[in-house]
Amino acid sequence: MDNTDFHLELAAATIVIFGVTGDLSKRKLLPSLYELEKNGLLHDQTRILGVTRRPFDLADLLEDAKAGIRSSDGRVDNEVMHRLAKKIELYHMNAAEPDGYPALKQYMDDIEDKSNICMTRLYYLAIPPQISASIIRHLGESGLQRGCDKHGVLSHLLLEKPFGFDMTTAEELIAATRRYFHEKQLFRIDHYLAKETVQNLVTFRFRNPIFEDIWDNHHIKSITITADEKLDIEGRANFYEQVGAMRDLIQSHLLHVMSVIMMDRPRDITDGDDIHACRQHVLDSIEPVPADHMNERAVRGQYEGYKAEVGSATSWVETYAAIKLYSRDVRWQGVPIYIRTGKGLAAKQTCIAVEFKPKAEDHNHTNELVFYIQPDESIVVKLWVKKPGYDRTLQVAPMKFSYQQTFDSHGHPDAYERVLVDAIRGDNTLFATSDEVMSAWRILQPVLDAWSSSGDGLQIYAKGSEGPDLAALTSSDTSQ
Picture 1: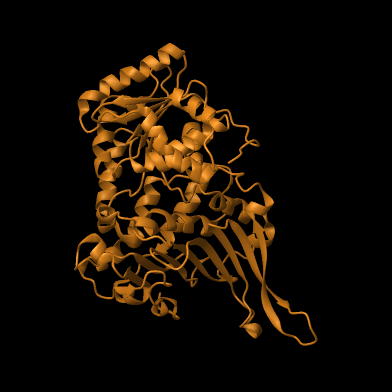
Picture 2 (picture 1 turned 90 degrees about the vertical axis):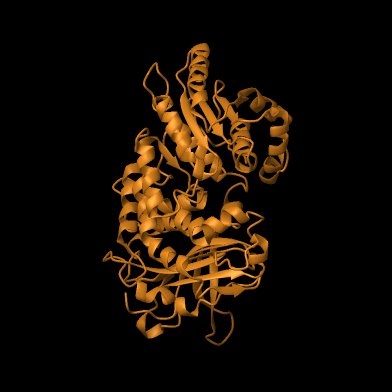
């Protein structure tokens, strides 16, 4: 990407990556740091410490990261890579044991003493979530959460999903983290919220008055949020057997996207606390699926061959999940909210579709506003127009705003680049708060509990298809 229009002056930072040799680091974090270095966004004094337990060569690590760089940038600039390499150092310690943390703290203090700069400290846990709690405890007990000793600057903790396995484990993880880190220090990463198209939802809604007055149940018929993937689980059997589609995307990402599309106008649309409060109100207003409506409000599927892929002939873990929700908020009562995601489907597409109600006398003609998040980032309004000719034949015509055509195709940062920049700046607007995480679990826990008890209702679908039959989900439902 080309960020020549950016005018950021990021503070010097010490970025500690736990799990630096892992897949996430090589595919996302290191390529994102490369882009930030390329565009002059990393302070000259910034240091990156990659924590690794086993000996690993930095040159090999950066070579592994080049595939991720090429996928987004097309090529690798050796001069940029050389500058980045000078900022990176592999730090050998066993992160699971407490013994190494005092030495890590002293090492970071020495970095600041030598540079005479009080640095922002970031701890990025690019590791399996089941071992995050012990590292958080070790960081806290070693005083690393306090940051720079000279000025009392707080450190920032970056956490990857999933944030717990259910309501109980999420609450336990939040409680354990709060022992050492304040809410303002926590950056729970939701790369969907960091995508440019999702960020633009706030601007689009509240800076264009033609839409704001029709954003309610008097004018909107339904909201549909879709995240379809052509890829299957890509060999991640252990991960997927524990998580499934509902936890993987709907709980961790899509419910938070829903909160952005449905939230009221914040008092200040540039204030992170105001935005969080509005998103929280949306989540608090959503009704969990009632037990006696589970079959009509929640659909799950599994692609053919999944059982063999994970080596379990009895697995009923879903690779496709769809849910129908309603809000208690007076503004949204009666509007169905459809959220669905799946693996091994016909096409890759993530989008938000807002369907508007037709006039009573013209019930066949509805309008639709669609936000395409990936792969074709765009906003489309579907309008009815008269076809050329002598008769009165009508058809739908799209009016499209395309990011690629309007701006340079590489003119905005990748989601992980934005995550790192905002964490260095201490801006947690795009990150989920503890309360938002718990509200998302509250909404989905009844479905997860019902699905955990048996495989009843699991639909098997062919890879490359549209997925399970959603007729029950999309049929009229007046019992809310």
